[in-house]
Length: 190
Image 1: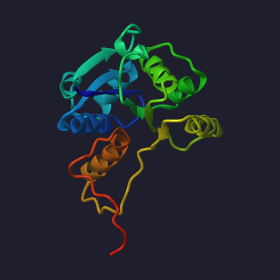
Image 2 (image 1 turned 30 degrees about the vertical axis):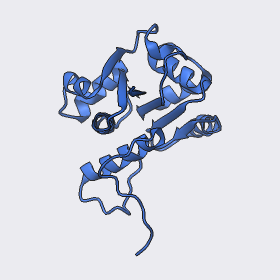
Image 3 (image 1 turned 90 degrees about the horizontal axis):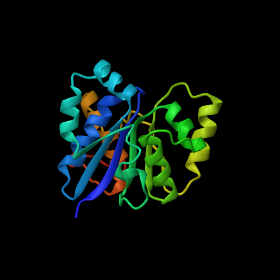
Image 4 (image 1 turned 60 degrees about the vertical axis):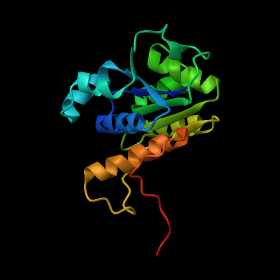
């Protein structure tokens, strides 16, 4: 049986990373993605990529509407490996931090935390205010929550932005046991 991963996207910059994560999940047999996109994420997708919404949906195994508060991921009895929010806006971070679950993304996140499943937050903002840092710090203290800002990495000698995005997407998915085929791990100085 496939392992379910909830993948959500909010309106912060970074929608190309969502697409790359969905592609990597799709390449890994045994995993099934359940995609939830906020209205703001859909707008940002148009601005940051050449992908249509329909093309992005094709990379997901299941697409859910953010207003469908009765969908499977709104309940702890819906079995998942956890949840990834990529990109994750500071508005969403604030909603998670306060337990304000007024849509399916926030409700599924709330369920993920209460069930102590893996939650990966690709937090996107710069510079970070003291409010952002407080919220992120307090969320990082919760078992299973991982804050993985999509930061550039150079030790793998990326040739272009696509390689950088792939590397970041691989790091975002690693906590779920997904191994990206082209992921280059640090092996030490040679």
